[in-house]
Length: 347
Image (cartoon, rainbow, N blue to C red; front, side, top):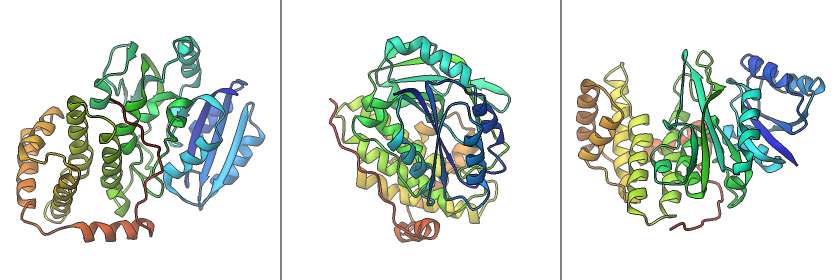
């Protein structure tokens, strides 16, 4: 049994994984295992990983598989991980492993479900959970702001208790877990130590030019919400999940473009599809709620005005279901299929 399993998916990462691999090459801690998953790369990624393993000073497992998306790669790592704790890292980012191990060993006696730390990005450091350092018990705050997945080291029981896994053949796979994981957390630690470096200069599958896979965030938000909402009857938690769904699906996907007309038409398509899906799942989709979510995000008055106007106009559009089904098939060649998670009702 290891203390920490670091799981990293790679897809055509030969030109953007150098910094992370250099950091990991300095790891000589027997309590750490590295699980590096080549997700159907078409470049030299697999050769680079195999060479890295030959020169590594800690346990390294290399997995090579067909392209299943980052969620599929992470699932492959989760299935073989031996660590008590898990860290899910992106290949084009970087980490401070010494800081993370210090935090883990310092707090392990508290037996937290996860440890959250600060992120360094765009020249500044911040907490994605926006909480002071300390030990917390589970609460409604997690449904309102769970923060970023990559800035957390999770106890393996959190994923293994109900076989929690990522959606495969999609991107924005983290969206679903924001609705699901909070149900299983009993206690967690927040630290102000910075242990994750989010690289903006590289274009990952979620940071590059918009493709048809961009709309996966609508599917992962729907799946996560539908599963998470069925696990609690708490009205406050339900409202927090409703607001999160509006934000992830409608605001993030339907955010305005500086290129009007054509792009705005596509945003209205998203808005129309949101109306359809929100009705199916029982999420309030009133203009008032949309305004409230926009205000919580602190958007400008101009952005809010244009966004709300487009949202109102989207009511007049026909159904967009077939349009986005075609987008999905163009992106992956298959319908969206969520993972098989064992449901547990939490009161």
